[in-house]
Image (cartoon, rainbow, N blue to C red):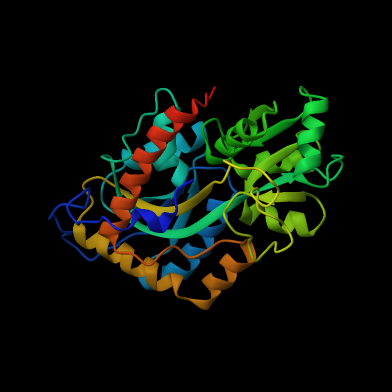
Length: 326
């Protein structure tokens, strides 16, 4: 996102979009819980969701199943949870794109994310890395821009789906540099990144978890990160602003959401157990390794308000930038 996440936390009342006063009638969960990840396996959300599920299992007293429902830039999985029975057994492990961006850019998006889903807890803050195939004759952003201007029809970039955050990152980069790139959407970051590694696609604005290991192994070359500061996992990689590109800063987050109507005590337990699992040193190690940050310390009411604020921000910002998504 272009706004600082902390900038959205000042407002925050418990009234907006918090669960009603219904309560579960039996000990919850009585069966395994499913985290729906709305992308193919191997992407950033999938990697973090699996680590978190492992750490939350003993706290919940039931196993957590990861269900990858990719497609429509996360829309299929998001819609599946919004329409699920509100018993707390089907939860969405969301990327910010699914909640605050897609409703503005995808025609026919079936989920009213502010009304059909309950924000429970944010789990990460993160940014993206501009990664190219090592055979691309560009060692830095300036050389990539020069290459694109020399041969404007040659550069391609993949994304996790039309309207996704890494699609937006490419659109912002194109607008900021004045270059033309061809967008190729996939059903998740994992497959989108693999075609960059194989040389089918020139580059990708990837979430960090699936990209860091490939960069360190020499299978990808990192040119820049999209946030306002460098990431500890890739300390030698500059930000886009450091590389001279203004107006293309972008960050994202992960969070857990429940279907509307889920009982308040279930929501409370998921929030409590998630925050407890996030304190585990193993989680910190996993986030550090993958270049992710812990989210700001906030109440659920503040998270609800932050989601609403960011949703409104992107609605206005996309109109201002006049960025078109196919």
